[in-house]
Image (cartoon, rainbow, N blue to C red):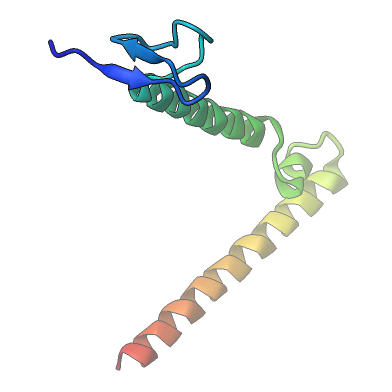
Length: 101
């Protein structure tokens, strides 16, 4: 294995085969920095997924409401959102087909 000589960006000391600076204990390894950043991105994605699961939309909450009238209102709202989304997707597809010739 080759010798890695890294100069610390904080204190400008020369370090040999270390992930942390010997003098100021700052992280100087690029591999460790990338691993820490990748782990933080994974954790952020997990937190977003958990938030989406724990906080459903208004229509989803109304569909599960114990009151019958709110339950019906939730299903109507969910159906309207679905139909509008389908119409929008169809319109986008149609415009794309016309533009493509």
